[in-house]
Amino acid sequence: MSEERKSADFFSECQSLFPGGVNSPVRSWRSVGGEPFIVERGEGPYLFDLDNNRYIEYLNSWGPLVLGHAPSAVIEAVTQQLAKGWSYGAPAVPEFLLGKEIQRFVPALEMMRFTSSGTEAVMHAVRVARGFTGRQKIVKFEGCYHGASDPLLAKAGSGVATLGLPDCAGVLPAVVADTLTVPFNDLAAVEAIFDAYPNEIAMLVLEPVIGNSGYIPPRPGFLEGLRTLTRRDGALLCFDEVMTGFRVSLTSAQGLFGVTPDLMTFGKVIGGGFPVGLYGGRKDVMNVVAPLGPVYQAGTLSGNPAGMAAGLATLAEWTKPGVFDKTAEATSNLVQGLMERAKRFNIPFTAGNSGTMFGFFFQDGPVYSYEDAKRSDVARFKKFFYSMLERGVYLAPSQFEAGFVSAAHTGDVIEATLEAAHESFKQL
Ligand code: KE4
Image 1 (cartoon, protein in one colour):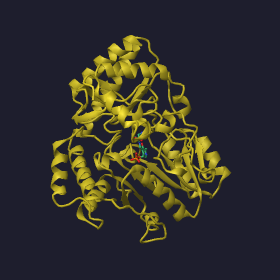
Image 2 (tube, rainbow, N blue to C red; image 1 turned 135 degrees about the vertical axis):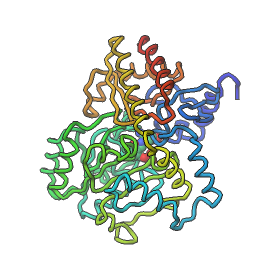
Image 3 (cartoon, rainbow, N blue to C red; image 1 turned 180 degrees about the horizontal axis):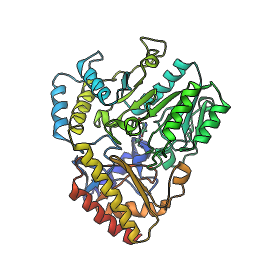
Image 4 (cartoon, rainbow, N blue to C red; image 1 turned 90 degrees about the vertical axis):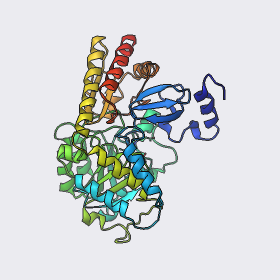
């Protein structure tokens, strides 16, 4: 490997092994052009690449790492578990403990099932909703991403939006024929769908705060309206909290906005960066899940003790008094600071955050939907992305992703980020 640019050499080798050289499309930097650096290690708020460049990073593994990289409490907890074995394929105490801890903050999670990814969690929630209601149709929102399962890859966000894919090849029309899509924050459109398909909709699923079209919060009354419309029709309301769970508040989006769904999915934070997903909600709904009921779902590594130990240790630290609030304040300071600096240079820019999850668009906004988000100046985003990277700040490599702040992003780290942003805006 040549000394001057190890990342480039290594990445070219990766491309012979993985499609696009990556194990998940958004990591390829296709939407910003260029090639990703190769990570050598993570420490707190930093990533280091093979060329020993240090970056203040705002992906946090796309959300899970609320404590930053390699927190000692998680290392210690997982190490202790490893010494006892890390996968039994049998009921064990750690899964019970993590389930009860999550339920403590999300009481509507009356019954749940762990999976090994967010994709699995939402995929199974769809099947459970159809099995429970006996109905077929699913409603999702344009620009929302719910993982890479067939029924939900219709007008999806994240990598599908980032790569500008028309939808997804290989997904049979018959499989998405029962997936209806509507614009986010458009209650009238949702009401029209229910009027068009009375008693046919099994579940309406959404990211209660979108992070996969960039950051888009719900307008006041939107979530409450969805709750009313679904209850009136007998459809289940599902909050996909894989990204928002324990991110936008310790009681997740449902606690932050005071709207309780029938089903919900989690991932990311609850595993602290280990492969953990979860679906669950109303007990009467979850009673249809095998072996109790006729809806089958399974997973070799579901609830594995190593992931459970990581999740428990992560939540134990994250829910300590003041930790979340301090990180949310740091996130708000970052967002305000970015907007102030963009304004100094008269750059069309809008930004926002919900708790420790944030995002920004290169446009004046407001951004209420994916259609709004698509009006952003992506060329300017690319320039900003690389200008910040050159100054040691690594943002999500796509205009259609969100950013995440960890407890390790202390005031000096935020300040350094804003200094880099000032210089970057100056050049745009
Ligand atoms: P995973 O299968 O990637 O664990 O979770 C899928 C998923 C489900 N629901 C929501 C709201 C999500 O944000 C995700 C995954 N998020 C993307 C980031 N936009 C993961 C990054 C990636 O695809 O590599």
